[in-house]
Length: 150
Image (cartoon, rainbow, N blue to C red; front, side):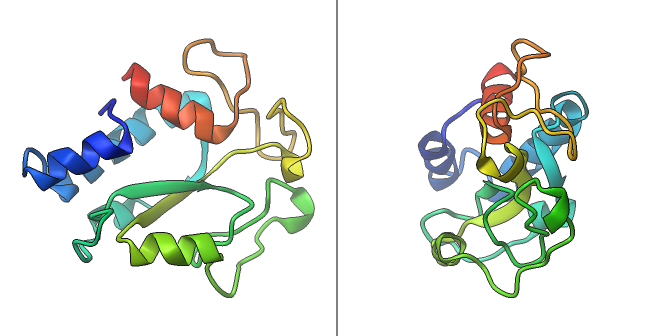
């Protein structure tokens, strides 16, 4: 679904689509494009089926960069030396997103340690621009651009 977050929330609000249907579409898109784009380092399909509260974000699926701590996901910052590091708590921003009803569905690719601007990463693989394979945006940018291309 090529809609921004506000538009997605509006469709859920007017019951044009349910949070579960939206999650199904998001998961299908990730599974279809990620083998080529490598935008997501990991994602949890079961999270897309979770039903929680109807807080402002209404169970909308959110992906975060690999340098942000999320319980249940490794936080390596795309660095080999931090591979497999499991946080003991959510980062402050994730706590706030969860309170607002957001559901973290995965971690997206980024520059190793966030130290460059190319998103070329020998440890986790390059991320690709869905409009021009071979060009390397961040995982976040690639995921958003893929939604707008679908």
